[in-house]
Image (cartoon, rainbow, N blue to C red):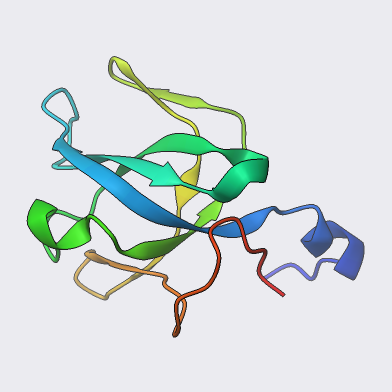
Length: 112
């Protein structure tokens, strides 16, 4: 693991947003959802592809808050542009557990 400076860490825009809609991502190589996330007034509504179908159902995701990296460039995945990276933790089996705040916070709040 490479050490980074505090200044490097501060460049990463890690913010909380609320998932407002979830769609199946039919064109993805691996099973995934297309998420629409409200990241507050400063960042706005953004879209993200997330390979979380093994642990989460569409119906349970809307309304949940998630952590996102907001200052990566958009990434094209099949015919979809992912605008933010939805954060999570890999299990040993490869599934992803979403990174979420312990309590509800304002959309757009930065990780401290």
